[in-house]
Image (cartoon, rainbow, N blue to C red):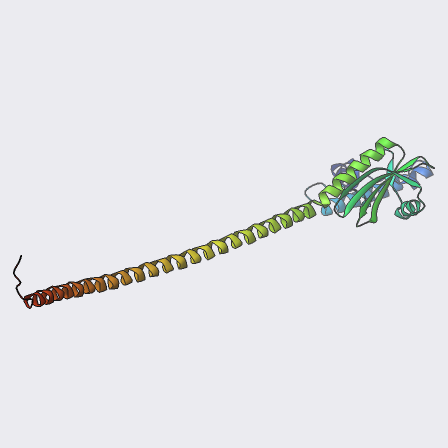
Length: 252
């Protein structure tokens, strides 16, 4: 029986052997203690063989701790730059303790590089509609200028939509003015065409009336000429008749 248990414990592998610290603390183990240890190891090996899956267990993966998201984007990773207290920056501005070195403005967004002479510190502030939104503090001018350029690019990106809106509004207003001028010009051309058409119709009517009057006058002239010719013939005939009544007088 003992040899069978020892054989199973050997087949189970050395990773399943259990070392009893209490036995080692008491000194050399007795035969009974060795038998109990062998039985316990065999039982543990049998339970492990029954419960172990076909593939080795995967080691537990460590859980990554969540990091807080900074207010300022991670691109501002300049040495010597830290997040400033906006209330402190507002208070220093109210006290007129800050000297502006750089100012950038794009629509509702503005960026200021401010110098605090008393502490030899620099502040970079991002404003929206005149209200302080974000602020950074730098110990030297080079780091402050890097933060200023970052805020400048951010303000430019934020105002891209407003830039496009202003351009579209101006283009739409220009198109509206061009449409108004074009419609006014078209209306003038229509009025001119209507006036010209009316004048041409008046000229046509006048020419027609003149031709009609000329025809009537020509007919009247022909009739009058015929009447005059007839009258002349009558006068001539009357003259002949009158001359026949004159007596024949001898000539001297």
